[in-house]
Structure formats: C-alpha cells, structure tokens
Length: 145
Image 1 (cartoon, rainbow, N blue to C red):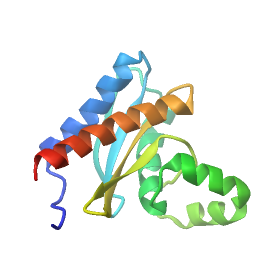
Image 2 (cartoon, rainbow, N blue to C red):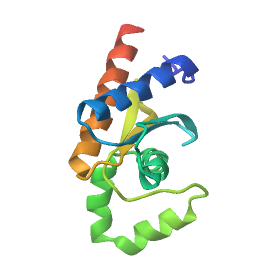
Image 3 (cartoon, rainbow, N blue to C red):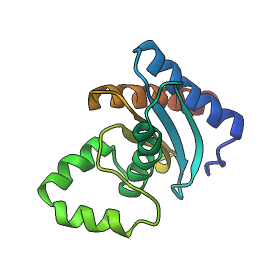
Image 4 (cartoon, rainbow, N blue to C red):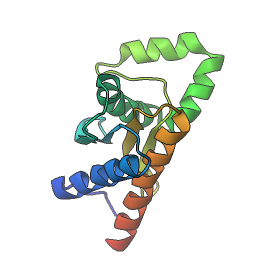
C-alpha cells in the first residue's frame, strides 16, 4: 500500500516522543522528522537544546534519508572514503552532517522519511532517542493497518 504523506498531528506526536525520551535522559536535545524528499516535516526540542543541536537534528535526518541508512553506518563508511562523502555533502542543497543519530523510516519496504536526535554528549544517546522515535513510528504504522 502506498505511504500517505505525514499527517501534521502524527508528525508532531512523533517528535514529541523524541523530546520525552530526551527529557527522561535529562539531556538537552533537538529532534526532527523529514519526508522522502528530505523536507522537514516536524521539529521539536527541549528548552535547553543548544544551537548546534537545533541545526544538527534536521541535518542528521536529511543525511539518513539521502544515504538510506542510519547516520552511524554512513559515518563509519565515510571514514574509509572521506573525500567521496564530503563531496556528496557539499552537493546537497540542504545541510547534511556525518554524525550519529539519524535513522530512516520504512513503510512496505520503502524508505519514506527519517528521524534524528541531536545534542547528547554521546552519539549513542542520540541513537537511543532516535530509536525510540522509530519504535513509535513502527507501532503507529502497524496499528494503522
């Protein structure tokens, strides 16, 4: 079944899940959701999120969408071929970033968007928060069938 576009209320709920996960970890963070065109659909942040986190969350989500894999995987691959990935990042009309915390969203075997979290001191925490959003996505799309 084709994926319908993200409904604004659902998109807002999905990033709210990410903010709640960040707050449970007492970590200032920003979270983002992009669609299949890498356009920002929803964004939220804890009150004390840094400017870097605010800019990085949408960029991480776009990076996960662009490369079709979690940004942690792209970061690992890019370490072996930095010149290739830096040129690809430079070619993007929107900011991309090689940093952990962006994860694609799948629907019926297709990548339909991506979520990301940014701002934790450890990349593993960014990944954890993004994974909480992916779990919420998976549950919501399963319930909708």
